[in-house]
Length: 338
Image 1 (cartoon, one colour):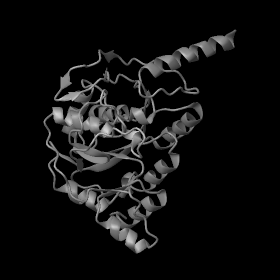
Image 2: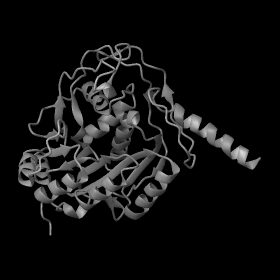
Image 3: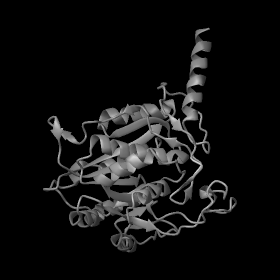
Image 4: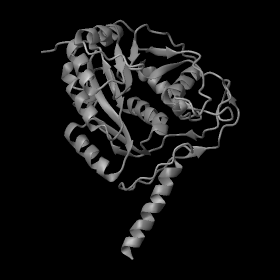
């Protein structure tokens, strides 16, 4: 009888947490300690919003924290001087990539402490199954760099994950000059990052690869079917300007403004487009930055290490590369602090 009761309670909890995720993505958790979600959806928006017809619900992002290192940006019960807050959206199973990042740009001591402050790195995750959660709990205990909320961690919840990152930065590190959001398969050219940010004002600033007039994928059987959207779902033929979601940087005032706008805007399945929609509503003009990002598509890996580094040298960030190449790039272009 007790076992049946536990099973019934778990099924009811899975139903609750499933309902808070996009109708485009239904994932059933095997088992995780239940945390009752308090997400409230407002009625679906069926009107034009700045020319964008969106049918997703508005999510006020009222999720519970599994892990929340609230003192990351604090010191002696006061605010630490934070120059750059790096928020890495990571899949729960990517433990080895997180370890690599902790050895490279995620190690705070690898960034020199200057007048404008320190650099801090955190990983943003959603909920996974029990075996994965054990690993995450251990990481959170060992390193204190995990921010985890109780929405399901899945591809179609990347918009929620990005909102989670912006929410954390707004609530617990609003005093940082800049916030960088990036994926866990991206490596930084540290010298170029510092060169870019050191000469920028810490207000109304955005930086990234700006995507303009990107066409909507209509062919469900194409190689790009992962990004397919029907005309009924999204009638516009192109997306509004947005920053490529692999990596971008915003000043903290824009991070807070995007967060406040996001919880009042119908969700969109592609997180970088969703942030672009929010920036458009805020009337933020995106300025393209040459050689900000290189994506490993088509594959540009070469056998000659010197040629590979020569390619990497020109870009602020390289995305979609192996852990080996990530570490090689960091070693070549990091700033020596000791």
